[in-house]
Amino acid sequence: MIEVKNLTKKYGSKTVLNDVSFTINQGEILGFLGPNGAGKSTTMNIMTGYIASTSGSVEIDGIDIMDDAKAYKKKIGYLPEIPPLYNDMTVMEYMEFVCGIKYADPSCIKDILEEVHITDVKDRLIKNLSKGYRQRVGIAQALVGDPELLILDEPTVGLDPMQIIDIRNVISQLGKKKTLFISSHILSEISAVCDRVIIINKGKLIAEDTPENLAKLVSGKNKYCVCIEGDKEKIEKLISNIQGIERFEEKTASEPGAFEYVVYAQNGTDIRKTLFKAVAGEGDMAILMFKAFDITLEDIFISLTGSEGGEEQ
Amino acid sequence: MNAIVKKELRVYFNTPIAWVFIAVLMCVSGLFFTLFNLFMANPSVNVIFSSLPLVFVIMIPLLTMRLFSEERALKTDQLLLTSPISVASIVWGKFLAAVMVFGVAIVLMLIYPIILNIYSDVSWGIVFTNNVGFFLLGSALISIGIFISSLTENQFTAGIITIATLLIMFLLSGISVSSGYAVVDKIIAYIGILKSFDSFYIGLFNVVDIMYYVSIIIIFIMLTVYRIERRRVK
Image (cartoon, rainbow over all chains, first blue to last red):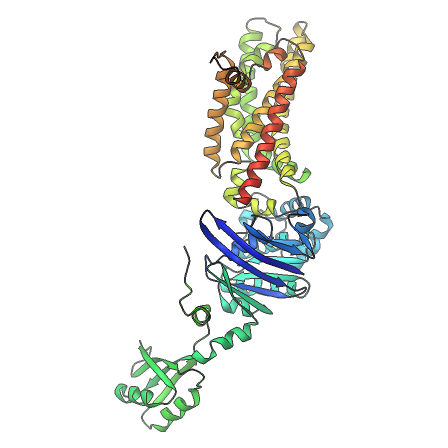
């Protein structure tokens, strides 16, 4: 449905996107993952027609933006990282304005406001709305004109946890009806809603897979956090003798008389049972806490690139 | 384009911009009317029009400086430029809204000849040509201001550059340059934007002068469209 072919964007001698190609299938929720400055917003801005690429093309249902910009743009709804809102308008006035510039029938506004749950604030000035509501108004404007593809650039950034859950629910509901392309620099954010993920780093695509498969890439490099009560010397001797443990680091313990460690398992080894049984076998020791570290975007980057992801200037 | 015009008119009249613009023009023109018409018992209204263009140097930037610079600064240009509406429609929409606010001031200024007509015979032909000339001159200046607004995302920078540009264009209207190069002389004569107002002032409709202002409008609107499109590619 949406085909991005060999996108390259250069600012002077600096290449911010380098030969990026991918497709988005109809009805799919595709996640776009990468650290800040990786080229996510640039890709999205090119796909929506805000900026032009240096080379490459984007087609939606066979329509290239260069051939028929109006028809192309009608198929896309875009929520940029900063929602493009006019603070001195009420939500209703803003939506009517958006209908005007998108050549959409204003009768659609009522349904859209209900869909993103902002009907109750429709007569309030946008500048008086909370960040969560502003984000919803941003999503509402993207829905005007019933576009096939919704492009959402970091839709939950800067929101508090309750607002994040709210926006995630709205996105999940939209995903049942629309094709979505969502960017984020947080893996858990993407894996919560997306069918498939593409990862970009320093302007280049480095992976394209399901969230589960990407997690498998780093599954052999599990690390665990364990808090054990007992004699420090004995605990450390015990851990270092367990087979499958590559190394461990001491952390600051949160409880008196207990010691906390980050334990790194060797590739492909599940050390959970062994460690548990070893500690249980010692009468004067007790596990107070034992948890696996979440797989982070950083872990995937290290796994894919062999180096820290980090921010690009 | 209607959506853009409506939105801009809403901004003009929901904020002090349009009210201040109209109030200042009315105050200054009212002062000229009182001094030169009422106190001097002069029925000729074009003395008001001859003095007012200088007020434009300050007032036109008030109308135009935020039109594109603010959109860029607030990132709302992302909404405009990713919508199916064309860049040309956006620019024309903003231009028309500014011209409408200017038009309101022109219509309100008709109060002066109406008052004069009570006490003497007013030459309505001259009133008409002056109003049309005034409107064309103002529209041309607005198109220049809009272009300058598209160059920067700081509206105050846009405002100051517009004031400086209009001032130069006004100053060049009063001098006749003889540089020895015909092309240079013609360019300087073209930049002197007030020269073409003279025919309207004395009650004439000169096609060349009308076309001059229309050409300025079209050139600067096209330059604005080009500038915005160009920025997308850069």
